[in-house]
Image 1 (cartoon, one colour):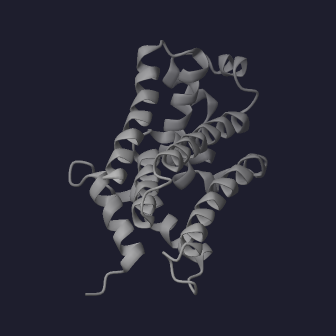
Image 2: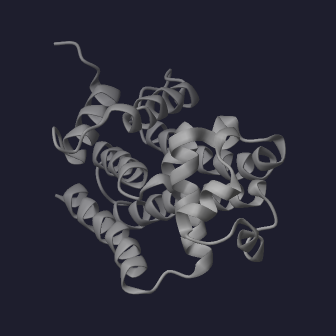
Image 3: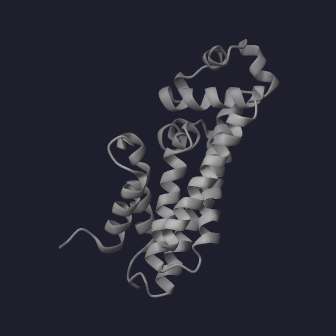
Length: 214
């Protein structure tokens, strides 16, 4: 039950971000960010030009420089906003499910991460699809914040292991990598018209927690 309440809270957090953007007229900077995030997801960093982004917004290419000094700075801002969504979701679950049973805590965090990826548009998806095409200066800015977020997941698994909920001989770092692989790959194939994120989160959690053997 606690995990279900956590899902509701996460949905509220995600929806409130979206609703706020809908309720408030988007600033010029936000419109450029939205267009850039969509372009970077659909065609990658190298193939995306500032001219294309400007056309999507309905402005001249030179106007982008009122908000961002370069394409690299714009891509960095998109990726930073994406990781901010993930961190906010993780923080919300940490606060809401701290006293929940171990499996419920993991399930809530899995659902939160999937929600951040699949319910917040292209900002978070860029971390899965376009990040690895980023130039070195963008990676230098973003890799530390990505590493910090991933370290929180490793810390969560280590905490559950310390509590005895995860076997002592399990490599939690490797487990985190496998878990991220299954969650992040869902952006490539998940269809909300076919299944729900709650069902996907439960399946991923179950396979991580108990495996698939009978």
